[in-house]
Image (cartoon, rainbow, N blue to C red; front, side, top):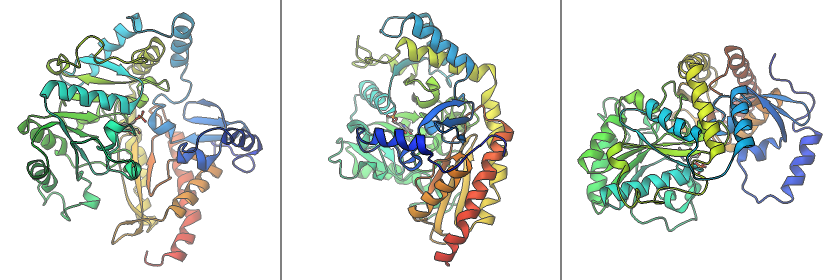
Length: 450
Ligand SMILES: Cc1ncc(COP(=O)(O)O)c(C=O)c1O
């Protein structure tokens, strides 16, 4: 091992001290990964993070893909430092903001020329819903099983995930339909013989269940939280056709998939569509909180969204986050990180292709670019999820070998930074393999059905 370096137990004594001090005061509910790891982080560089005990970890988590450039990229650090020393607050135009909106409209698919900024992902999705209502004058929304768009009241009804349990009632007029997750087809069909039966089901659902007042279909081009689920080619095109037939907008939530993560600048480009609205966020600021919407020119002027102060927010487009985002997008372009992500993603997928052969509890490995999912199953035939006891053990085995990987559910998710090198990717996968080897005998001993 060259990059990861773990000395002694993890978490080490200093991590435990800081973690326990924080636990005395911080509200319960911090991310599962942070609870499992109990690490206190001192610094990061590229794809490596270092804890306060001097242990170095390969970071395939990157704050759910936020650290697109890796940690502390020198150009990003310089841009943030320089902006912080000038001005960090305010809604007025800055040179950086004027340049960022132009740059974003240049790299956006098709005619998505208008940009508005927010500071949280759910906030941006809610703004997209306001915009869709403003433009269509309709009131209902359709999301997907397995979809995730945040935890605020306005989006919970579009979340097809247990995060919303016990938090009802949900926003009226929100509906969910099965996603094209072919490994778990809700309709029991097989692609391509199904001829997109799930899309036909969507049509019927709207006719039968809604009041036929659909303002938008809200979809992740690849479902992140559900496990980096890649739908079959042509799916987004069909959703767009449906949306048009229904007089609704197509909103693509590219919070995770945007800015090169999937090997294209935006994941909707894999299906050659231009949505009406694209939600951007997470990695956009390379670590500073900035999210936003890319909007078709015609749609952006709809009122009341377009009224003065109608689309804005306190922190949206603040000078500091904008400077971070401008540096992030410039580095992605200058260093050709979109193509690099495509290459490195293929490299990792090729290495991971042996996992389903080697481990009977690996149901499938899938992904696009550096957005990779490994689905862990209790039984390959039923495809039932592997017990969370085992996912926890895999997480721990990875951590003590120096890899941070997102495995708090049986849908393991890998998000290396776009700057990851072949050597680090190789080492990370070697650690993953060691961790799987370490738990394989235990799992198989207890679950002979494998
Ligand atoms: C696709 C998607 N949209 C929206 C969100 C919500 O973002 P935030 O946590 O910043 O509200 C997330 C968060 O994971 C996400 O994955």
